Image 1 (spheres, each protein chain N blue to C red):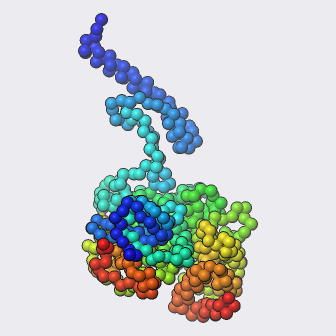
Image 2 (cartoon, one colour):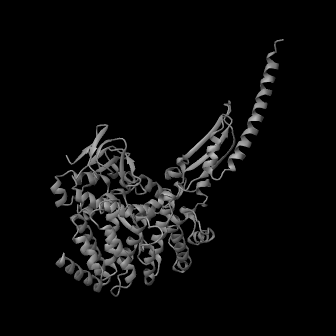
Image 3 (cartoon, rainbow over the protein chains, first blue to last red):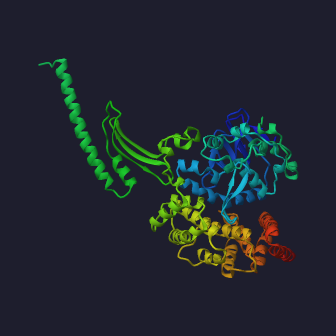
Length: 227
Length: 332
């Protein structure tokens, strides 16, 4: 199976396989990243390149618990494209390691976005110095760079704030507490919103390798869960 | 003669007080000596040489705390139970967890004194006052802040000065800050002064620019011209030449897969093309003729994206890109 629930204490991964971690709800995937390296690894602490936030690149991978894993059986060429994508963006986010926890909270909208899944932070004239991602958005864009369009991004199901709150608990709390506006995360208006959720990635990857490359997956709302 | 219980207790109290007094004097002397060492690390090392008696109390007698650029803390505390040294300690989760931060309270976390809440004008003043060595966190805060166009004239020279002064640093944190300064500088600099960036990536400088910074320079040049396509061909020939040198250095198949060379090479090629430079033919051809097919595809896909972007903003530039592709593919 290209995607699977992780039951064992160790698992064998390919480089840039997609690793997911459950959120507060059972089987609701709330975070995802790219396996930093291949080989047998401790499922409780997988080194990943992910949009933490901040984005963890090759020089400082993050770590997540692997509850689910998806693989497209990447070729070396595809993996090299993904590596190049990560190397291009990682420095933009390394700056966040320079600020303290409080500033990280205050700067959340400058480093992270919910909708759209990837978005440049614009200056007044449209120029930009950094690209923000959601955690699922980072994975989607990395695979896009390898010409693997995992998801039909125009066909995402609309979701309400109660689901977004499970997928993005920290961001939602910032909104609830009035510290950041919903608009700042792209959640303007009354909703529902076509938000990219991590669970969709694993349903997209849970197909034949040729199908993954040939056809983008159109997720359903239930696909926020896997397993 | 045996002591009564009361006398014994008084004696014990007297001894405890005497020990505490001596102990306190010694700690103060040790602390004073330690603080004379240059740098906090030396202070901690000095304190580590001390051995302190245990006591039944947990009162903090002396100590100091320093916030590190990473946002973590080093601390050395003398408690009545002994010496406590913390390295890279996290502040209480209250600061990191938005759920625990009250939205309207008078707690210190809401006091509004952190750099994250400074206005653009305040940041500009801090950067001006910081002189030659502003803290890295200040540069990072500046990058994330939107400044009024009227403030750019003050900000740009400060950023440029910082970039030139610190680009050879061996300190990882400073290089991250230089990267932030480079991105901000290029994102707000006048487009007609882009040629000045050539000095950052010229070869023969006393020490080579870190590849992470070369990546930032090439990426930002590309992004600037992606948003503002050159109205005429080859607006900055010297800058294009320096980028072409980068391409030649990193596109070599023997090193392309190493480190971050593929990111540097591909961005340099795309930056040359985004400048509508005559060197774009050679640069793109270097990718097209690479033995690594994935690298040629990567560059081709990105320049397709550039064509889409330019088609809506500058049809002439988009047409030039089509001609370039035809020329490169015909001769690849």
